[in-house]
Image (cartoon, rainbow, N blue to C red; front, side, top):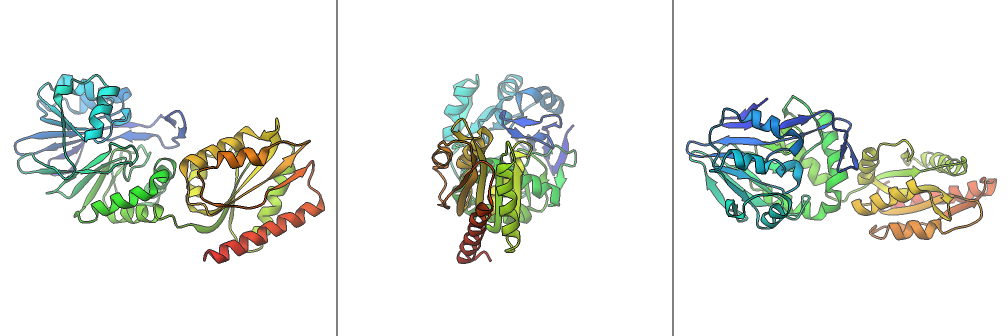
Length: 391
């Protein structure tokens, strides 16, 4: 399948509707796509990115009527974008591989490509295809250090690589900012881009002067209404949080769940929205999206082998890696005889620039007096949200 998105510009990528896990970690409830684009100028032809190696045959079939390619542009060395490069370069021996300076060494490390066929393009460099001009812009740490994007000046198309992407496999290639696409894009941002919020803001500024009419990412549909996704990225990268508490928790004998339910009731009675995430069944992507929004995170865990339950520890590790804009963190839970649950979780959350509340850990089943402690915690959260201007 190939699809024309503008004059002389074609989507030639591959859908992966059955894939359910990315990087052996990230759930893909809607599959994904590996977007490659062909740009035909009056004198030269360029292929922008390739596909995951598992879908190379589909890319080759989409290019079967293309006898000659002058340039292959690699925005990002990760294999889901560049894994088919060796096959493409064998098929088109005349083509030259263009990439950023840092990408060159990474591609040589990851793939069997002759060094003499790689040319580094500079940040801000332009390339003429005849009646079409490609402009290269370095966008480091979106989400690897070597990434760049390409702007097709005459058509106003930004080929954005992982920037503005979404894991969404759909034959409806052109999308006008509907809710499902923005939801998938937010999930993608939360799971992949959140740790790089500050540099994403700088990269957004680099794009601000461009007259962008379409955004063509490397995953998910093409954004026909670029303003919607640009504004969404500006908001997601801002670090602004909401009057929201999320409670990722695990319970073994219902003691921790009692505390979680009590805290939920106390917070809701104070007009503070709460989202619970039972870590034994919750979608990690939903939790990541909530981390992007929540002012406060309360981790609920029983003590297991003198430490937090492994699922609670895993949630802490993921949050620590994603570095969400969380303002306040608390730990509640239970134990049988003792342990170092709090110390362990605090160590796992060392990257979090947030204020930690005093923990509430109860021995055995919670008693009536523990409800008073939970009530005081809820009131403290309310006051903190007020002082932060969230209520």
